[in-house]
Amino acid sequence: MADLTVQEISQTGLNPSFAAAAAGGDSYLNDDRTFFVIKNADASSHTVTLTAQRTTFEITGFGTVTFSDIVVAVPASEERWIKAPPAVYNDGNGKVQATYDAVTSITVGVIKMPGN
Image 1 (cartoon, rainbow, N blue to C red):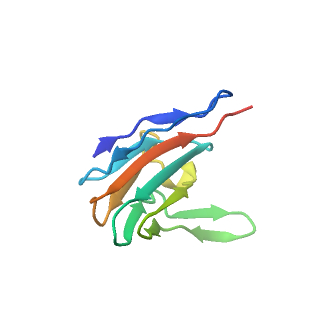
Image 2 (image 1 turned 120 degrees about the vertical axis):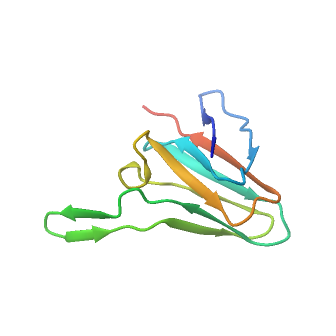
């Protein structure tokens, strides 16, 4: 699994870079301001899965709340920005794990929004 570099937007802007999706999947450091971006330049739709690390929470007044993997279909020639809440999707190292149904013509990046 390849580690992706988090790119933070500054006051002067950001010209983000994107890397080829790794066949074995990718991981990235995640917080409340981080987005995973996937671009599909292929002629076919492809799917990315962000793995849930914690699937159930006990919330007072609501009982057990269940979460599952985030599975997003990215149509041909389109991109998606995906937000993964850290409490559910971060592993023990603070990273999200992303896997793909195929990696042909798929590029990915990690963008962090500025804080206050």
